[in-house]
Amino acid sequence: MSSIFCCSAIKAYRPARLDHEAKFNHFMRWAESDPVAPASGSSLASEAPYAIQLVRQVNYGPQESVRYFIPVDDSSAFLEVTEDDLLSANFQKLNSFKNFKCEEHNKFFELSLYQEDPINAHHWRANLERPARDIDLALRKKEVTSEFEIEEEEEEEESPVTAPSQNRPSPDFGHDISVSESRAPPVPGHHMSEVESQVRESLAQLVVSCSAKFSTLKPILKFVLPGVGPNLGSNPLLSLTSLDWVNRELDLGLDYEDLWESELTSENISIFLNSCIELSSGESVRLMEIEDLVDRAIYQMDSLKEKQVLGRMRFESIVDRVLESDASVGWISHNGSKIRHILAFGPSEELLSSCRRRDEEMQQNRLHRKDAETITTWFTKENLLDDDSDNYGRRHGYEHYWGNEPVKDDLACDTGCGYCGQCVG
Image (cartoon, rainbow, N blue to C red; front, side):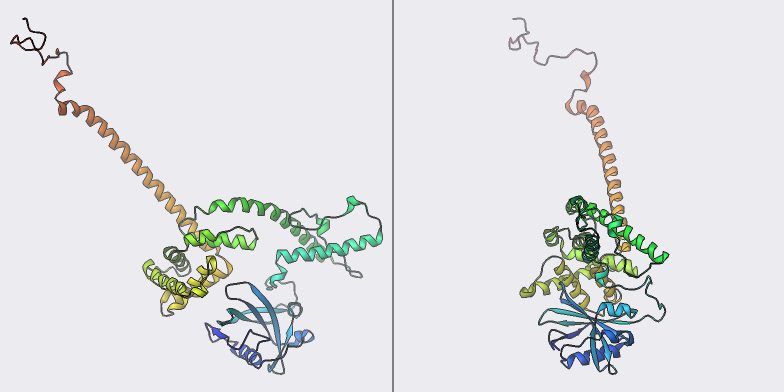
């Protein structure tokens, strides 16, 4: 089993009975038989009834490998194939998968099912789930580079001497690419139809447009995003998850570890979970109920000193423990899979819009309260000024001396004492 999985100690992770349970059972029985390195079955891919994708990765960490297997001999054995073999055979990924976990090696395995698409016989369909490498910018850049190298070799054969000004720059997302550079060289003996020519032209223009926009967007984001940290809104962890997602996907190299450490509190985690619950089901759950489960999960994490992690990984581990804590809790059973989907694939547009509306409402309420306090303070000050001017004389006995009466000298006397200076001696 070590040639397929890491060891024989793997266990099912959240097992569930599936419609295609038998197919996964056949593969697991074959994997548990400790087979030798499986032979290539590329030539048999088009005849296979289904295929199994095996994704191996570090738990909450990087992906290590993606492999594909097809059954032979009535599913008693399996052969390994490639992604291109499945694409050529018109296979499509189904919404059927099983997860396995190895606590000893901290590995996570996902088995997914592929079958031939019975509806679309051609390959230019919009719903084909292409492998990640077909949409990865870094890998696409390498493919375009190889195409340029082929084109340059052909040009060198036609004209051995090339002027320095004619040398083309290597295609990079930090440089501009012209439409003519993004076109792949024609295949000898192949005549493109008008439709193929239009598709190729559209793809070339798309590559040029994306590369130019990306080269401009990346430095702008690296300049702007660090300033977002001090103001994460009413849902700090949702904002931080979004920032971290952009940072990782675009490889911006920003460090949010300090923000994760300061914002990863029981209250903020509860707010994040509650926003996911309200969006998916509309039900209302008291924050105290969620926070009790979060506190227990944090306590369990802190007690496992040797497995303690930081940042986003710690956040995902805490949420995972909360969702595993008590399946009988209604909001966990109804919303657990959706919350995991948000953590795995990023926040949805609906969730972000809901949080933005809440922030706008809070800002409006804050402005209304500030205006009300300003008005109240203004009237209070005006009343105090009026009262002071009217009552000051009464409080101090000066109210009778504001007219034209002469001011009486209290020091003068009629006894002729000579003390006051006004008596006649």
